[in-house]
Image (tube, rainbow, N blue to C red; front, side):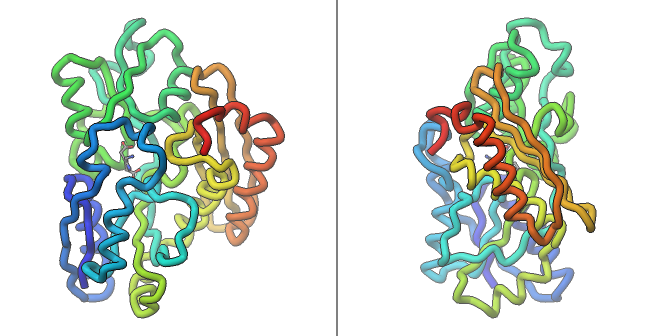
Length: 299
Ligand SMILES: NCc1[nH]cc(CCC(=O)O)c1CC(=O)O
């Protein structure tokens, strides 16, 4: 069995984690196949690429061509619009959902005017809501490149997903983890998705041993919010859900890019109705003006 992976350290690490988990559960060996994607080579700002899924499409092409059997994606990079050719055969147990600050001080201790790097409109909007007096600098590149801008002194801090930092062994450089109450993560953040062709029912069955039902319900609700808001991965939308085994609790927010306005709502429901919970919460947010706040970020 061949598992296609992007070649970055983060991607190969998370693909290897899934391969090891699979081998531990089934005794079957997995071969990793490295693939270069457009998202890895472009210098453009992610938010200017005009669409989601830049990291995803090259892996999907290899699935269609039959070069690989399945692929592991960071769920938050997957477009919410379902492509019927592919099936999310497994959503394994989620890692840390939170965002982290990499810098020499905590966020509250940064001097006014300090340069904070992040390429994500969601993070910029939410960080502005916390502190208007900092200079938010759009950056991209892999985590290593971003952290390097702090080490070199070009930036005072950068904000990255804690899960990604941990996967590449850089958790020691985190100066603060933002609690979800102050910085709501991106829908699906910290979760990995195992995808294969829908026609490969043999694989869908095999891979389902990796699925974690509580992760699946939580991220289903979060992604339903994003989908119903008709927002993409570059929109200033945060969502976080937790399934305690009985109840699914969901919170979502849309923040204006200047950080001055937000529509934030929570709801609880049955994990078996995760999709409806997310969709209904998004409808309530739109009724409160969420779509107006997203402005031209929505697509
Ligand atoms: N957009 C890139 C991306 N996709 C997934 C992660 C982090 C790991 C995850 O959420 O699973 C990252 C980097 C980051 O946001 O810092």
